Amino acid sequence: MASNVVTIPNLLTCLRMALIPVFASLLFYGYSGWALFVFLVAGISDGVDGFVARRFNQESELGTIIDPIADKLLMTVAFIVLALPNVLHPTRFLPVPFWVIAAVIGRDVLIVTVAGAINVMTGFHGFKPSWLGKLSTFVQVVAVALILFAAYTNYSFYLPTVYFIVVLLALVSGIHYIFHVAKLMKEAEQNED
Image (cartoon, rainbow, N blue to C red; front, side, top):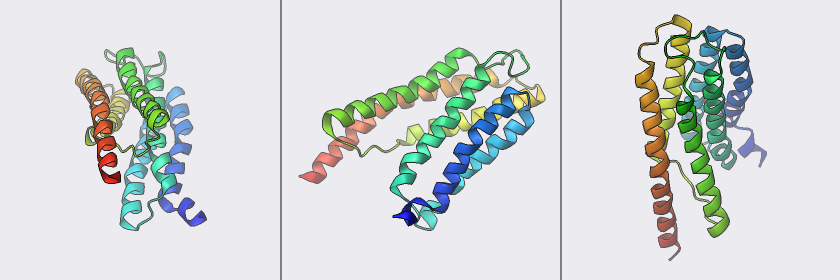
């Protein structure tokens, strides 16, 4: 059992979780360059843990639970701190507008609420991310890096486009997830028959 828990991918996921308060603190205290570096390390660790898990057959049930939690925590904390007034040097498009944060967090709340309600009502627990959800998360990671880059360099002309794409994908992927889960449930029912 311990060998399924203490794996390199799970340790990398735990490292990513441990970097969240470091990232938030650096950002809060005005070290946007270091915050960008820590965020990039966390993002790279996410890609590496998935690769190692698949390549070396170290996938685990714990990993399938904590990996998306680590991703959501990192993204939620990043967007909340980036939206706080007086954290980033205010420019024309910073801090991040509230409507962007509302879309990102609202999507996650929708997904967790739908999954929880379905699990309680039916006992179904075969939830898997959709390709659109993975794309949305990837775009959010890139967006945070671009926002931090803008804060560090004062080049922020591209941020409205970044915000629009993040919100659009958050809304579309949140709605799509409901249909994705319905399809997963239908497939599970057919496999039981």
